[in-house]
Image (cartoon, rainbow, N blue to C red; front, side, top):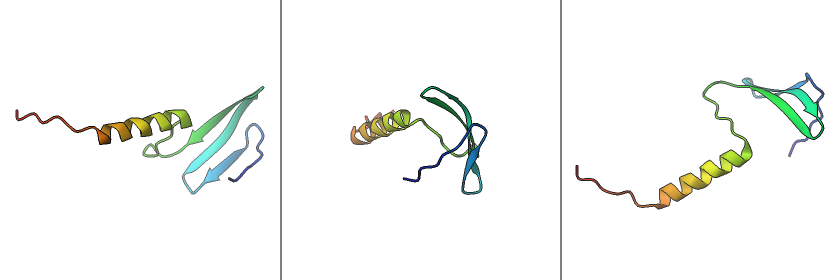
Length: 68
């Protein structure tokens, strides 16, 4: 894991198209601004893990066949 120190208003760049800026620090909370292409999916980790688990369950559940 790369660990960086940034102050409010400072940013980091990921590749050429993602920029993360520290917007505000209040106690233990940090607000980040993320600039990325609309095609880049950005999730909080807990949401990402829930989506991943739901996809795993859906993939293992047999689909019902509707002959129509």
